[in-house]
Length: 183
Image 1 (spheres, one colour):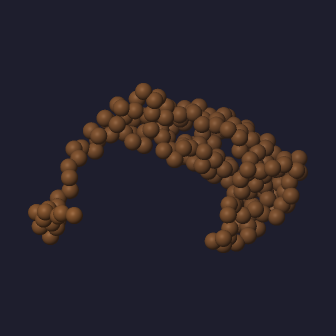
Image 2 (image 1 turned 120 degrees about the vertical axis):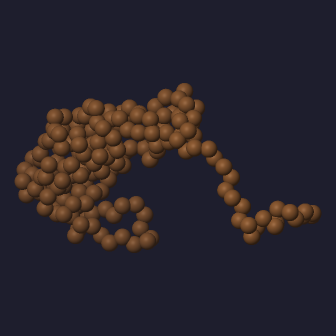
């Protein structure tokens, strides 16, 4: 869903995501799996050339274990608080900069993150996708969902990887194994 910055009223725009197929699809892309349940709401307000998105989202999805590939059911949710700025309004970053560049905007509330958009249209599917991508743990394994499943997850991984054998010794270095080195 694309929202034109010019179409956001001064009082703001409320968006319910619960029954939106585009939001469910974007959440699945961010999670990296199939979404089983999804709920969320946004309040979008315009601040000059910037748009603030505040709300919350929750999703239950099925993703593959990063170690063994078994399906995992994960629940992810929380608050979203982001100020989207046009690329042209973001200051240039240097190697000395720490954190994200903050646009010169004063708001009545604190935002946790800064995003970017083209300055005219805010793609809400991208907002949803980015939030779930960032909030999803970098690694999900069976033990994260069920700590008792760690040994079976490792066994499945080993069976997928096949037998582990020592790499062949480079013939040029084989002569070194015959040396008897003393201190």
